[in-house]
Figure (cartoon, helix red, strand yellow):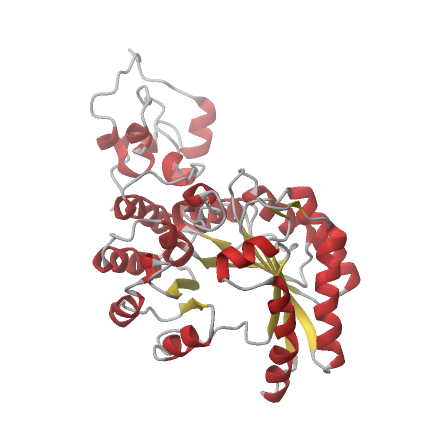
Length: 395
């Protein structure tokens, strides 16, 4: 398997900046907003493709009521039939104890959730009622029970979390003081119980994130609690800012930190209770991997296979998805530089020549009456060589 740097001659890995972990949410966050008619066979095909991309964490679905989330009605069958790949951590979402009991029947191949020692609250009391049929106060009232259970189990480290952190479609924006106050209340309880808080989870299900506000919040968190070195962001892209916000998070955190980013193949995702449906979207995993590669951040993920998985995901769900890299390709380098005699490229299909070669444009028009030459190109690839002109479809 080629890593991005091996396959495209990407810049040398950057030393500064946080370590980045990617959590693939397409099978859970993505599928929960797609058609309930998608078969288990098609879902298995996509899950198995994702498993061979180099992704290290994949959320396979949710153990929730099929009445309200019919897309997850066959989660037991999916988990029973998929083929785990060594080195990949497979997880699932469970919102209550009944769901966790169902999930435990499949551990392994699933892994136990890592959020047992974590408190969480939604800043929007409307959304939490719509989404989980609980009140904000009920979430807060549960904190002491969660902490007592964690202490009893011997936990020495814990996480704090907020959801709908930057804003709500029912209450409008939330400011930094509100976010920090809710995190402080949780931090105080864990500290009083003798448990160190070293993680934070921040969710944005309705796409209110803005790059400057994400950066400001994380800088404030690090200043207030320098012992918090693991930051997990679940950003939605309803207004096109999620990848920008993830980039600012990466710029804000230092090398002593780990930044965990949730993303979804093709960018599919959304909650039916949030008001935007599929248009809520997420960061397309392939766009995120491409950006990190260009920044010199090693991911170990094969971008070629990820693009193939994204195009497969479009066939599985039956409509176009929102990736940029899967449509235009990564930045070409070396043997992947475009042919200088490339004909007119106009359509989405023709643009796929970056992976299909000339087969993508059999009838494209070309005005070049004589070969195009370039001393600069010769200096890059050698005199008389035009690697793009002989590119064949990638196997």
